Amino acid sequence: MVLPASTETPRRLALRKIVEEAGPEQMLGWAKPIFGEITHIYSTFDFILRYTAETMDKQGMSRSLGPGRRRSRRWLRTRHLDRLE
Image (cartoon, rainbow, N blue to C red):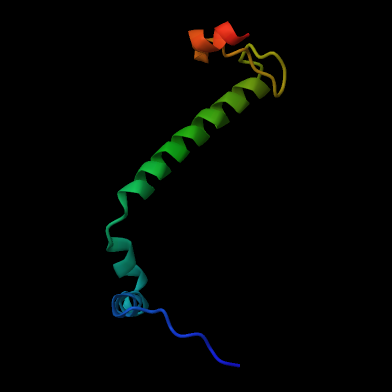
């Protein structure tokens, strides 16, 4: 059985070596990608809102239609979609 040819580039090998030699303390100091930070912020915000809504629903603090139901979101529709109905 013949092994496939390596697709590792010199740049990738150098980056892999840096990661292998770095300790946990060094890795925590590395710059984080902006996209990851934005995703984390919005995911956290979404989780907090959902948790708050579920807690309020369980405590009877919200005017809910019932578990798992929601009011119509008519305000999301455009005039174009209203004409189709």
